[in-house]
Amino acid sequence: FKVSIVSTSPIDGQKPGTSGLRKKVKVFKQPNYLHNFVQATFNALTAEKVKGATLVVSGDGRYFSNDAVQIIIKMAAANGVRRVWVGKNTLLSTPAVSAVIRERSGADGSKATGGFILTASHNPGGPTEDFGIKYNMENGGPAPESITDKIYENTKTIKEYPIAQDLPNVDISAIGVTSFEGPEGKFDVEVFDSADDYVKLMKSIFDFDSIRKLISSPKFTFCYDAMHGVAGAYAHRIFVEELGAQESVLLNCIPKEDFGGGHPDPNLTYAKELVARMGLGKSDTGGEPPEFGAAADGDADRNMILGKRFFVTPSDSVAIIAANAIGAIPYFKSGLKGVARSMPTSAALDVVAKSLNLKFFEVPTGWKFFGNLMDGGMCSVCGEESFGTGSDHIREKDGIWAVLAWMSILAHKNKGNIDGDGKLVTVEDIVRQHWATYGRHYYTRYDYENVDAGKAKELMEHLVKLQSSIPEVNKIVKGIRSDVANVASADEFEYKDPVDGSISKHQGIRYLFEDGSRLVFRLSGTGSEGATIRLYIEQYEKDASKTGRESSEALSPLVDIALKLSKMQEFTGRSAPTVIT
Ligand code: VG1
Ligand code: CO
Image 1 (cartoon, rainbow, N blue to C red):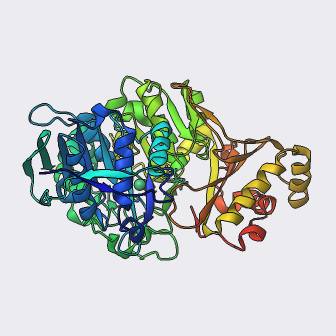
Image 2 (spheres, rainbow, N blue to C red):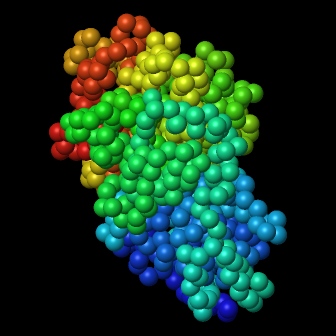
Image 3 (cartoon, rainbow, N blue to C red):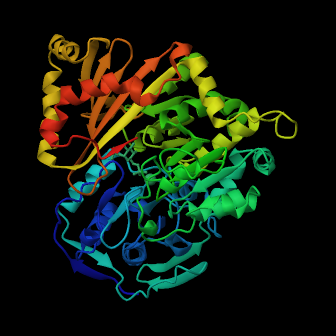
């Protein structure tokens, strides 16, 4: 192939957000839009990460992925990349890309130094919906802010990019290597099985025999909903082929480029089918629900864990996994190096860390901050309130890992029960037991999506200003509800990375109450239109006799305060949030 140099000019708005660049497909389809971002990324990397390097390119298979992969292959070839690795049909979950970068070796011993992940995660897909792209580094984790800032700067000055225009499109539906000869020598595109490396990694972490035994027990029933995302490519392999489950446990497990028209976000609002099967909410189907249910988002890094007629909050989930990991999961048998959560995630994990005497870290929202801690050997298990849970086996959150972790805990707790007459220890039992031991963090998140960006900013400024006088805040709070604790302090969250010393500012506004309750406000960094305001509400209850209340009822005084303190309706014109999780 030959290399042509195409002139281009900067395009506005290519700043990567919490997790890469996410925009409407029609924006990505503009001439040079994807090209500019890809070249800006190449230019932000050191030369040896490009010239002669091996890169992974794949994603959740959403609409426009096929076109994007071919474009990136042609640009990689022209930039002197030696090899591009593509999952069959462009499918690799976000955690699988991380695993492939870290673990996979080519036939000649080659290793990847990074990869492009093509996904907009839980955002809908299709011609009128979202596409996205992000770059992950050699450790398998998202590029740190120092790199994403550089990428953004490059998008503002880009003038040209090289591309191998005459390179034929590669058939990405067939496993195998296609070789080309370019001006700088050989260039290979290798299409490989999307699941092999990931399945191998999971088998090295969990005791598949004990999970298989649990699944084979008639007492244990489950359901897994991939929401037509890429998790489907792994669910059949792992749950059916490896662990012996019936095909009927799989729901929406055929990956589709538009996610079947759905919103592939695993929560109580969008995972409607699963929620109904599990006997939760209004749409209860009436039959006896399974004992265990789980769902994933489009790129399979998120998870929702459900028991029979029971919802596990993601903040509780990570705390429960951390509390049980050592006994239940072989990978952790020699202990946990530490645990971490994102700032808005509830403090349930903090209580476990304290009681098990573990190192603990609170980081800004987004997975990139966990990676440094893990590379530094300081963190084994971490999670976010936004249905993200993971460990240091890779550098992304991992939806299927979380499901296997829960199955491992269930298998462990039911060791004596599976064969005998004993009653199954259920998901709900495990959670209630956890609350009895550690106390319960009542928790909810309100999202106001697609709010006018200017108004959202004003609301945030209002909240920052309010923080300058805590007595004033308390006067307002007491005027709304006299039955809540005082606000003890308030600030904008700032994080100093303990490994590289980098500082991230303005990571969310916090109001901290004397009894440990918290209100947190932040603006989303993953939306593709307008602004999304997120409000996180949390209240700690230590008294074991009071941990069984309805969450919405327990939190209603704090919700009231949050809405009035922020003047939510005044600023946004919204009387109710778009989604409550
Ligand atoms: C959201 C979540 C955050 C998560 C991020 C990426 O970000 O709140 O916890 O890490 O999505 O997840 P934001 O900035 O919109 O609040 V994913 O599965 O979309 O890659
Ligand atoms: Co995701």
